[in-house]
Length: 126
Ligand SMILES: O=C(CO)COP(=O)(O)O
Image 1 (spheres, rainbow, N blue to C red):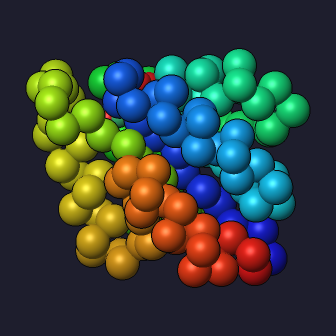
Image 2: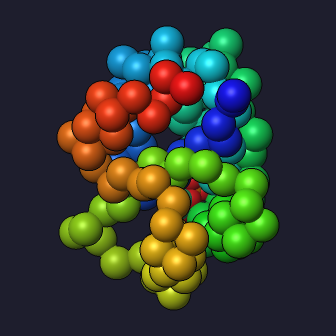
Image 3: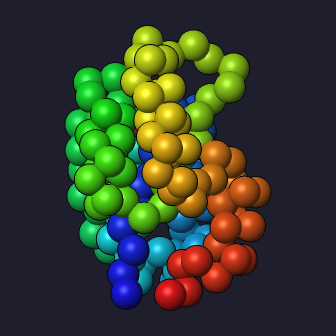
C-alpha cells in the first residue's frame, strides 16, 4: 500500500533532503510525496520524474497544511529537516506541526541519518 510521505526542509537543509531523496529514490518512488512549496521545487529540480504534490510554502501556511493532513489521517510519514541554527519567522507553525507529529504518533525523521534509519526499518518497503 502506498504511503503518503511529507517532505519539508528549511532552506539550508534543502540540499540534504534532496540528496537523501535522490539516494533513496527507489524506496520513495513507490509512495506519494507531498512537500511544502519551496522544498518541493528543490526536490523537483533534483528528481524531475518524481510526482510531488505541493502545498504552500512553510511560512505561508504550508506547515499548517501538512499538520492538517496529519490530523485528518492523510499523512503516514514525515521527513522534516529543520535548521537548528537559524530562527524561523513561522516558528509557531513549526512547533504546531511537531506537536501534531507527537499527538498522532507519526513516524518522522528530522535529519538525514534518522531518515536513513527509518528507511532501514522497512517502513518504506511496504
Ligand atoms: O518553512 C518550511 C518549514 O518550516 C518549509 O517551507 P518551504 O519548503 O516553502 O521553504
